[in-house]
Length: 425
Ligand SMILES: Cc1cc2nc3c(=O)[nH]c(=O)nc-3n(C[C@H](O)[C@H](O)[C@H](O)COP(=O)(O)OP(=O)(O)OC[C@H]3O[C@@H](n4cnc5c(N)ncnc54)[C@H](O)[C@@H]3O)c2cc1C
Image (cartoon, rainbow, N blue to C red; front, side, top):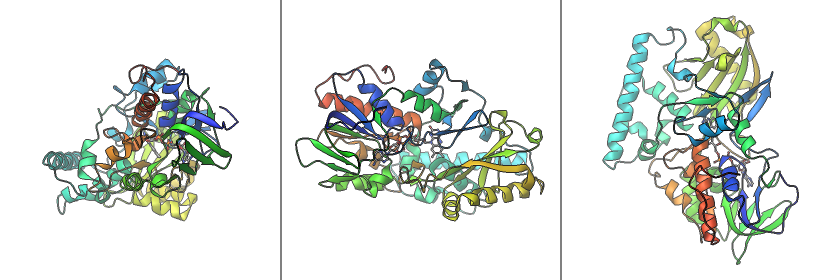
């Protein structure tokens, strides 16, 4: 970390989330002046772990998706973090009274058939809302939309067919026991990062880019911008002269909302470790419950899409009230006294994220490529939203940070360095 805002830089990196940290590591060791300007007073962005009772609770990213291929999984182990390979809870429904075994099979079949229709439509060049491929009258449509709340932070009527189809995942999901956020933060240690330094405007009218911050103006030859899409779309970070095509591309990739509430549960032995329940099957306005994550005496409630927005609008305590009502309904009235809230997220209200992760609106599948196109070979955009096949993930953001760093180095006439994922800080 560093305290002083330099007057000039070769490369300025805006944002110290996964993409910004990856970019900073990728340019470290080059004969360049570099700084990361971070708005919050902490680093890690949407990968953020909060300590509780000696353990780490992830408020944002928790899963190393595609873990068998995820470059961060190998790195976490190499850096001394504990990579937990317990299968994810969504593969183990607790109790059979929420959905019978037969209904679980029926739902999985309906979801697989929906995804097949999406793949077929995308292969045929069709575009539009993914919900247009729901089977009319299918009783599982609300649950499919609830899953979209978790995957996209929005219902399928807000999700592009082609973009949803473009996502790639190996289906292997691991966790960092100490916290994914802690691990990402660890990777940002010893980098030249200025916290509490929001960039409000990038003046690109002259030969040097001028970055305006409340701590002064810094000039840079190149800038890597890693802020969430909504902040570009709403021009919380403004380009001057404006870049309407970039702003439009960001607007096509809004952040959906996913929220977490960590609770303790008394009598945790009644629940199988790392299993799951959903509140209801007849509506998307329901929550998922990860019972006893890592075997802990806790429940992690997960709210996606519309219900997350509604509860955020009502305030933090509304999440606990909603989760308690659903769990009482499923498991009996004594759940009311057994649950105690520990900590919950408010990513939508957070001015430096304004949501959870990006989804492409129907018709906007091409916006990820548009967003990442370099501007004047000196402004490079990176983050989860530009990761065309692994958007909405930490490893996607990481790889995009590295990609933007290579482009910035090349623009400054420097060797882009080792292959992706091989760089050392
Ligand atoms: C609830 C939730 C669950 C998730 N679960 C998973 C999961 O299980 N697995 C997974 O891989 N991913 C998950 N994600 C997504 C993952 O967290 C993100 O995709 C990833 O962390 C995004 O990294 P990024 O660098 O693109 O953006 P960010 O992490 O948002 O970093 C951008 C940084 O820019 C800063 N910033 C913003 N505006 C300015 C400004 N004007 N000036 C300076 N700095 C600014 C922000 O403070 C932030 O630190 C989850 C996210 C949420 C919210």
